[in-house]
Image (cartoon, rainbow, N blue to C red; front, side, top):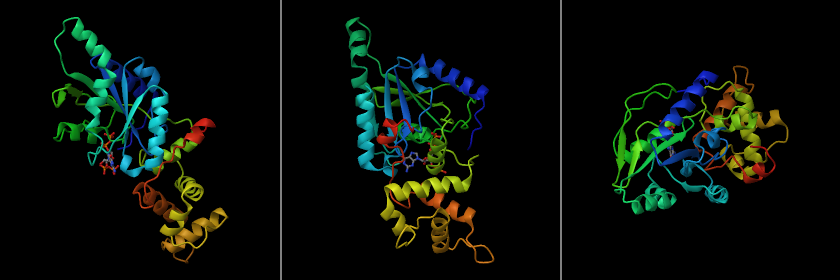
Length: 288
Ligand code: G4P
């Protein structure tokens, strides 16, 4: 489901997260491991403030494992504990409780020394749409919790889900908006399926994808579309892929919209292998 994020929705989403923050000890921020920065809400630091936080790089099964390690190091250098997980398959989820305990150790030790009764850690999940919040909650709850429409403002009675004895999770995640300012962030969100019906031009997204593949994974590009060489010229690239994949119009000319759809779908469905689109080097040059 695509959300149209208007200023009113953003304000409401922010208010809802801020309200729930009061109930929890820790925020579990979900990002897409393929775009660990581009899939973050642009105001996340401000919204979460001083609340302790654990970042989960979800969909790690679809990301480049070497880059995922680099991003985990990056977060840790910012003083933020981060874990790579696969909410769908379950990989990495067993570390969540222990990491939350480590992050909150001082607070809970302090509570204990003041004579307070031990209790479970309370947590909430936040993230932009489609990063896997519902999948994670269901997986941790070990049952299917109905999705409350992916719409900011849709509310229902708040419930706690027990994750073992030591963690309690709010059953509805905080849904925050993605970044909009930067075109390349938009392309990355589209190529990873974070935004689907997009206001961005299909051919522009595909071109961004092709250029990214050529620069970073040229052999995979050649393999996937049986190309001996990657043509230099933009149109020739589309022509080569379109012809190989039979994306032709009635007269036999390449259909660029169809070709773009094929490229985008292949990237989203990991047909060219696991990939990470956000690079540490872009961060250093200010491009994310
Ligand atoms: P949300 O609540 O944050 O909006 O996300 P949701 O859980 O609905 O997940 C979005 C899509 O991502 C779902 O696919 C879900 O199965 C998939 N997903 C979640 N976590 C993982 C993961 O760790 N690995 C992989 N490979 N996929 C994951 P879907 O329902 O099929 O929707 P879509 O494919 O049409 O986007």
